[in-house]
Length: 449
Image (tube, rainbow, N blue to C red):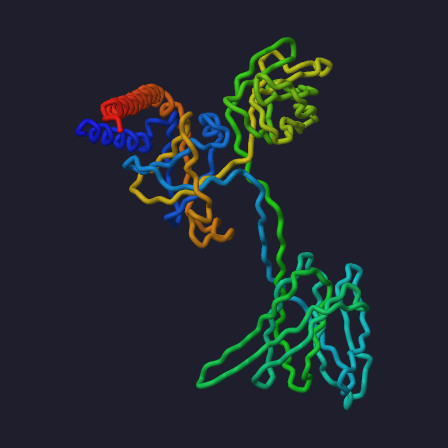
């Protein structure tokens, strides 16, 4: 029985040892510098991480603190995100008069400039006794983005609530309803509350018309401001590689081998010789067993045009996973010269967000063939997460200038780690076999029933 207990204890310690991750088990380690507000930090992964990783999905990426403890993290693949821009616009406004009868719409006489901007607006001159301020016309013709908020400042009105309808038009002839708005001014015991803002439906319009429900108590406007919102999809930034060595296959044909399949977005080829003209065709494949697929064709050049130099040295790629690249240069352009081409590749940079719990310095580690993903969903890592929260996080930067040193020193550690893991597995299997033998021996000794 003592032997069994000892073996179980040993097996538990073995499992705990295997679960404990160490920096030394990773091929490459990069020091991190932190800035901004924590405890969460976002890190744009340099392309050296992709070259050192043993898995294309970056499951073998970790962040460690100064004591070697792994940090909780989330991984955000490189992808487009929506950027929102809010802008305030001061606009011109014009009074709308109508006959002093309920339900009578204002009558307009309008003149517009060549770009559509309103330059004059007046009523069709009812008599002084008939003049009644019904509302205001707002000139938003210079605003190209959708309108999301109306802000008013006024004077001369009684305290309380003032309601009005909102209509929109692009030609001052046809109007569509945008609902209703309300402003308010309340005061009590020396305190005052002003409600000045009205939300708009987020649509574009050249003109807005405000008509008061109770014109006799309506305020006189002092300042009118419109807020617009413009949204645009912005691609994730590109992460560029250093110059990759080329292998010549034949005349004007070259090949590059990548550590693993990567979704390439762009490539850049440096042209050393002036007045170079090179029609090119790039092909790629995801593995040695796969067939070559055309990626892109284009024209690279470096030409002198008087005092100017014309240069085209980049080419867009479709973003397919590629582990090998092949280049064919059209000899009719004169080739690339005596030196092999100097090529750089780029892919959309992924981001890593981690929770800094321990003490600095923090280290980014990557490159462990036996690692499994430890990434959390971002909504789990940051409770109550909202997309706009991402821009407020602190930032981290990886120093990949020491990547080669870390990689060289970690290779020996990696071999030692492999031997240690094989030894632990051997001990585990030996313990299981011993337990099975003991169980079989006890069964044989049991008396027949």
